[in-house]
Image (cartoon, rainbow, N blue to C red; front, side):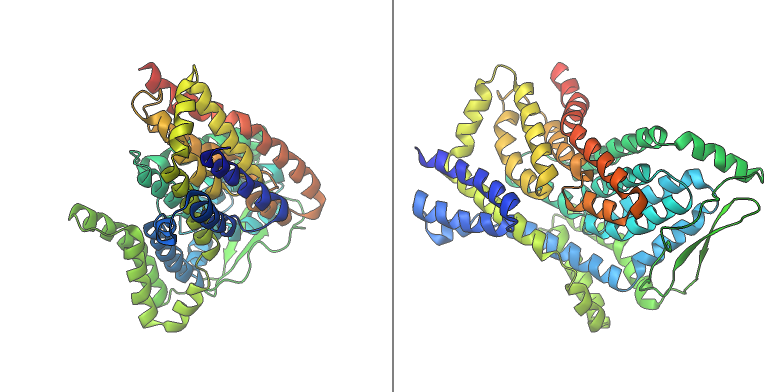
Length: 456
């Protein structure tokens, strides 16, 4: 057995052991890098650690630190409350409004930040007689759609892995495609699970009619405690049936105003430095802004540091380090030769996307993306048959669309936030939908993002 095959078996073992024994995949991959690199390949420790993605981890540190501060100051809670207030009595807009809110929050550093919106959304669904499966799938689409933003962890991961692999990549295009695909899913889900009836109820409420929402609110309060000192409560007018969102208004503090301003400043400063040809990444800019805010309020900075996603930093660092060992060993090139020998490169791409989706349903989306993008690079090189970056976009989106399945954190959070009487049905429906995305996702994304360019 060659060293290349041993190293590839090691990669498969890392995913398997992580799933079966619930051991952190990044820690396993980092240890695997040392074992394979030092004892199998014969490299030195410095060579192995040379593949450690410092730039990517600085981005993750800076972004999650800055937006951790934003959450600790209550700025994000304030934005959520104001957005819900704008929706008012229009119950048909509630799923769409919550999708937009959760998508925005998911863009801010880590998509897991949007988990704070999930209990609110599932409670509102119950109190307004909105199908819980509809709301659960919409929340999942918001989380995975926002996750591929260039300011969120998964989006940063795809960008970092693609750049290190030498693949032409546009983070804004990736984000746009992710939002577009998930908006389409939300549209389908809305009409599959009672959207027409919600529209009729909204029209009836607008005419002063009956039935916008007359059911009891067994799901508990819609809002919770908020760092901004505000909260959201949902009221039902028994006469008109209209939905009212009452918010305890809180004036923004100077620190919250500063944090809110820092978000557009982050984007503007990064693009300005890029145009000026200054060699910095997004994480350096975010970390600088976070430190400035910390100097003004050290306690907020200390609490924000607790929200840095060290778990994902270790995960990404371990996986990319192991893949770099595979690359130096030549295992990636050998897989490329196998891929090139396949009669249909599109079939090879479909298989890779299905593998990404299937593994992602049970394991880490970031981990599988970090492992498979380098393996897919040979298909994108001249003569590989898929000389289009669209395949990277299709691979990343395929791996994320299955996250609604309750085997992972996103799906499990949605099910746990559902009222008990609907929990079993939502669990069943999310399982079916998530597993169907293992096939539907790759087929649709490849058809939209790869096939047209091949035909052209």
